[in-house]
Length: 235
Image 1 (tube, one colour):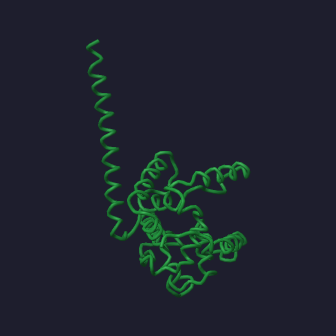
Image 2 (image 1 turned 60 degrees about the vertical axis):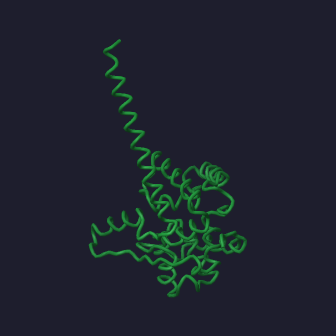
Image 3 (image 1 turned 180 degrees about the vertical axis):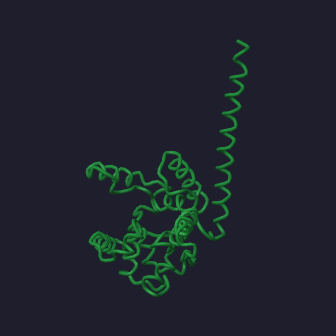
C-alpha cells in the first residue's frame, strides 16, 4: 500500500501544476483584456502571424493598419458589419446559440462547412490572442476569452475593436485602412453601398480583394443592403 503513495503524490502534483498553469494563462488573458478597456492594440496575434508568414518570402512586407475612434466610423458601416457578421450582436452575451444551430443545420444540409456561427465577440477573441488553427483547445480558450470580453469591455468597445482589427485584404486591417485602400476616403465618409461592400468581404477578404466581381460577393452585398438599416448597434 505504501508503495503507491509516491505515484499518487506525483499524479496530484502534476494535476496541481496543470491547473496552476491553466489559471496563470487565464489571468494573463484577463489582464490583456482589461488593458483593452482604455488602450488600443498595436497589433493582434492574427496580424503578427500573417505578417511573419508573408515576410518569410518577402522580408519588406508590412501591414496596413490604422486605428480610428468609434465615433469616426460611419454609423451605416457599423450597421453593415453587424448585419453581415452578427445580426443578434446586441442581444447575446458573446454566443449566439440560434446562429450556431442555424449554421449546423445549413452545414448538415450542404454536406460540408459552408456557414459558421461565431459572433463578433468570438471572432475578436480569436483575432486578438489566438492562432487561426482549429482544435478543441483553441475553441475552449476562445470561449473563455469571449466571456472576458463581454463582461469587461461592453458592446461599444467590442465593436470598436473588431472594426479596427478585422482583416479586409492581404495585410489590410481595420475599417479605416480598408476604406482608404478601396475607396480613397476615411471610414467616416463611407456610403451605404461602400459599407455593404466592405461588410460583404469579411468572411473571405483576401479572395474578394482579388475577385471583386464574384457572384458570391455581389449576392452578399445585396443581402446586407436589404437589412443593414435595421441592424442595432451601440451608440
